[in-house]
Image (cartoon, helix red, strand yellow):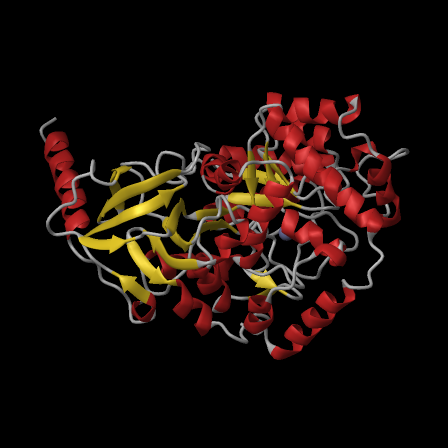
Length: 469
Ligand SMILES: [Zn+2]
């Protein structure tokens, strides 16, 4: 009985001292750190706090150690004497972005363990869920190095290897041979430390059900990029979340056979689909009723409509020369592309996401930085503009990209908003992204766990590396 209070006191002392002492920063991390002080005050900032509330002008945010300790109008918040004060006049503070479909691979599923962690962080992404891994041990080891402040990067929620059925599919995936195989794979990786799984396009209902059941026994969650299984079927099997939205839901295809992914050519069905009709409303209703969250990945879907993809020199700079040339020609192809049908389907995808949120659904966002111009961090920033185009206010778009992501991951007590008591994961941007959405790109400093990183240095360090390592 006596041991319990003593242990509790020790824990409290440890927490208090962590707040004040400066931390041991590894040599691989130190060059990118621009703010490392026990107490930091950001003054005169515009604030978009991640709750969806309208932007507030002239705010002060005080950070002590890893936590936000005070937020309020400048002048009403006491600035501690020992604080390092940063004048944020003309700047905007948003919570660190939580990227929910933020792979650690690019171009042929090559692991980007060097460039991507820095690129995510430089763009203001402070937490990612990898949502399908081609090398889960690389991700687990990377996560440990980031967590122990050896290298810069976002906090990584590692997702197990893809849960995929037999049939055509990338060579990095294990083709499941049945429910027992699905349970065996989930059990193994859950014990290795992954906390999410992603099921993929060819999985059967039986394998998916087995995987979900086993995952939940281990406190692990399951999301999916579906095709063979429809959204409503997956909801009925107890899935936790669904990726990508409308354009991966095959249940509207006439003649859809169960457990079979329809041919790509059939996707023209979306072109004439009534997103406000009863069939789509039923899908959304069942997702909301069963609290199945959804990840918007508009930036990667936009790639099918090259005529509307904005040129981004930063992408070309980050890519290895060969890939950079390919993406340059992709941008150029947009000038003559006849992609009206794709654009119509893209708009329907946006409508679906709006309808899902209007119905009470929990929507997060991720960049799916797999290919072409969709790369780590910059894809997440593009999502901000696309969510606004889809009809969200800038503050709601930030909410989708931050606190909604935290809720989906179960981190909402610790992350996702700028409020006292929350972990100090926040982004200092030049300009005003509420008035000018493109200002989301003007990242000055990214704070993760109270340490400020120089966005420009991180960005400079990955030039020509994406696609290589
Ligand atoms: Zn993906």
